[in-house]
Amino acid sequence: MGSREKKLTLKLLINKESGRVVFAECGKDFVEILLSFLTLPLGTVIRLLDKHSSLGCMDALYENVEKLDLKCLQTEACKSMLLCPRSVAERHCKDLKIKVDNLDPKRLYLCLKWDCVARVHKLFSSVADARCPCGSPMDKFALLWKKEASCDGGFCEGERARFLVSDDLHVSLASMASSFSLLQEFGIHDVSLLQEREVSVGRHEDTLVQCIHGVETAAIQA
Ligand SMILES: [Zn+2]
Image (tube, rainbow, N blue to C red):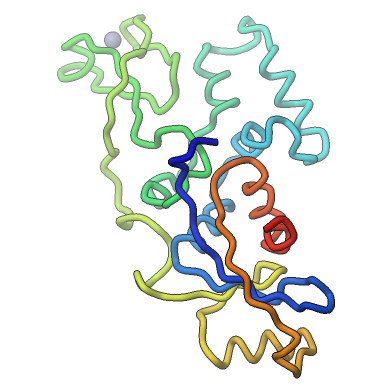
């Protein structure tokens, strides 16, 4: 973990008696990272969790594809596609403050022959090791955004919006009403039972797992 790693700050409200997080107050940046987990392809989840996803037999399947003989596959690109699948929502995730997936979403692969790029095929590949119809490998990359109808990025409305995230990952806009509603849900009638704590969240593996399993772990390890 480098010292320049980007971090986000969450404000946790903790029940001092149970040690349980009631909710985290955070900005749009953290909520969008949380939501972006749903856009990750299954192969990416297994890769990011280093084949310890506990998703049934999927870790074993991923490992077996890593070892799979290329003779079983149409092209070498099929293996890249299976092990490093691209997300269809990567444009939405391009400006996340912390990149959950370390693949560069703008990277596209080309065959640099003039006919292939500009005149005849005009093709690009989103995965490495694809083969151009001319027979050459598409192994040169360019940083481009494909033309597509999409938003500018992100998922949430309001640059300065504040959110509450409960320990079961219920997300709501921060307000007095939503705060009281969560306190009621937890049966908390005495605010002196609550303790406020700030934690920093980065991209390293422990934090990634914390985000997937809930913000409660973050409070315990803070
Ligand atoms: Zn070509």
